[in-house]
Image 1 (tube, rainbow, N blue to C red):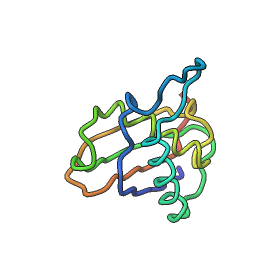
Image 2: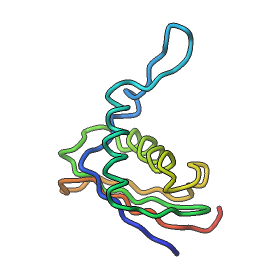
Image 3: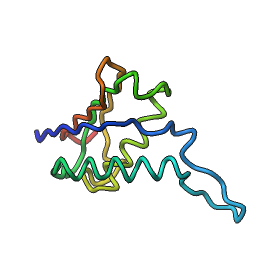
Image 4: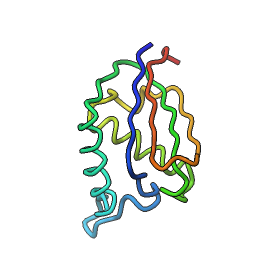
Length: 117
């Protein structure tokens, strides 16, 4: 099993606040979410994280001072960050997910390979 750990200094905005509807009928990423994706992407790249192939699981520990959002509203933006930066191939390959608030000052993601479900 391959395993890697990523630490970020900020949590994503809640999923409820990440997208808006355009007058033309489409959806768009709100500025706060785009800014977080950019900042978190730089942090991710600086850690020189490798890539996982196939199915994967994620354990996430979020410092309670970073966010008060519902944990399930933080999961999707974090997984989307991993897909965007090609750490994992596709969020459809996610087979395990554990999220918890802790006394940490940061956000820690442990990503690991799993067997297909």
